[in-house]
Length: 86
Image 1 (cartoon, rainbow, N blue to C red):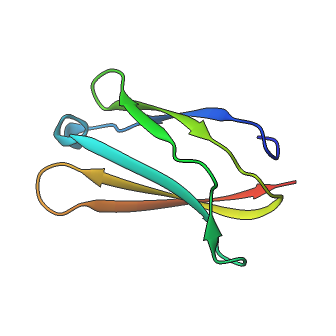
Image 2: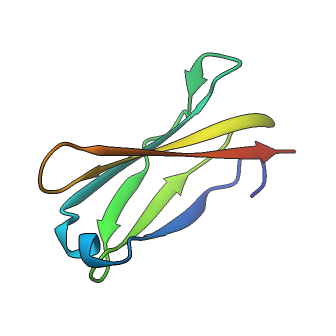
């Protein structure tokens, strides 16, 4: 991933719970700067338990945190991924 370059992410959920995933939302923030991306990513389901995320852009170098919310049966589940962009 490069600064200010649009990229696509693929999310894959495995196991018995993969079928229960109905919708996914995603965003990214820079915790040190207290702001997020300047763009709104688009999430599209592709196959069972898999989603394609387009429109992701890290517009500044530094530490980012990708935040994924998974909606299915019951309460939403939250996942984070720390990413360092140089």
